Amino acid sequence: MSFSMKLKLTKLILCMWSLFRGMLH
Image 1 (cartoon, rainbow, N blue to C red):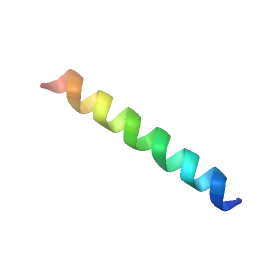
Image 2: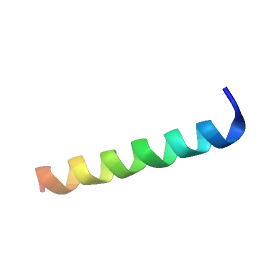
Image 3: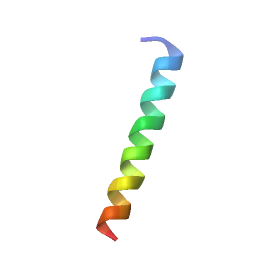
Image 4: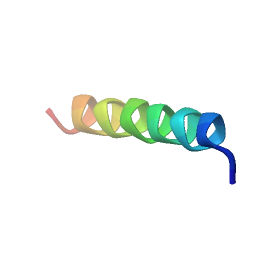
């Protein structure tokens, strides 16, 4: 996997995680 792909994936996971936390609170 290329570096840019990993970066995009990390950003996506962080976005989903913050959204998930926002729904919990």
